[in-house]
Image 1 (cartoon, rainbow, N blue to C red):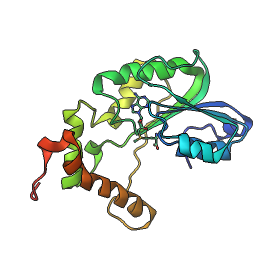
Image 2 (cartoon, rainbow, N blue to C red):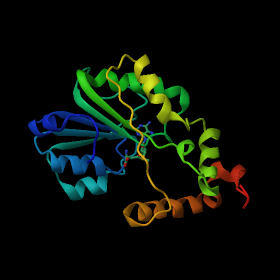
Image 3 (cartoon, rainbow, N blue to C red):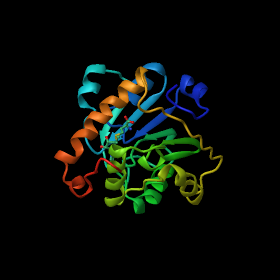
Length: 207
Ligand SMILES: C[S@@+](CC[C@H](N)C(=O)[O-])C[C@H]1O[C@@H](n2cnc3c(N)ncnc32)[C@H](O)[C@@H]1O
């Protein structure tokens, strides 16, 4: 299932959805395919979605290059459902309240907003590679504990009926999850050598 909000029937009937910070667009494209009566808008500050979108050719989705930390190119009360996933490394701590206020501005009264975050601070038994990521996240002013704070931010912005559900993702395991995380690990292996931001955070073998 690609979502938690209780909107399956509405999606089947046909609603207007926003995927904020959509990345290359996998969530939007799967949802467009699954719910052809609904219309999906996806925004990201980088247009990495172009290749996937051009190949997919759905007519119920629109991808827009936009910065979600600025005013979104949509009127008030426009979307029935907003999805945002894994933007923790793009939003500095002080920007979260404005970002959520802007998302709520374009959400219809009674609409649903779903936020999924997995910051490194929440990883249990953190190893050396994730420690590096955690230190970089803090150094860059991002919020390592955002998943625990979103509820408070949403309350402050006037959202109601808020539900928080922790999801446990096994790392260093076999199967599909294990294979996915193996790719993440390979990327992290490259971090200390190739990214300026981690030069000060090389890990030693005993941390
Ligand atoms: C880890 S990716 C997640 C992509 C997608 N949500 C997913 O789960 O596959 C984070 C995305 O956030 C986008 N992003 C970061 N800051 C942004 C901003 N200010 N406005 C729009 N997109 C932003 C990045 O370009 C990147 O595509």
